[in-house]
Length: 106
Image (cartoon, rainbow, N blue to C red):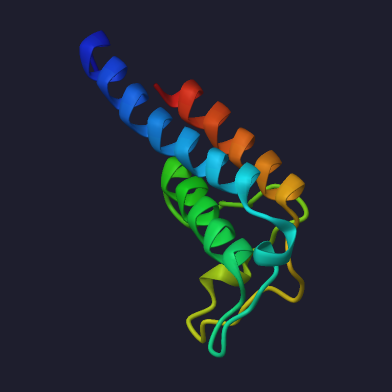
């Protein structure tokens, strides 16, 4: 991969990661954990996004392990939700993990 492509990919992925970070930081606590009728609150959408970003940056599913406290439950074809809600701080840590992984890849 040449330097120009690396720069383009970093800018685009980096901007998307930055926007997600801003969304996490600015979401009020009462909204963060608010659940709808069919699914958990915004925390889950963020977790889902970060889990799959991490997996796609990692390569094949075989051997993939997300950082603690996360697990592989998101791969369950039954679509089960995590056993607990994740805090903004936990997901910001996961976001930083993925940002570092992307930087290493590029």
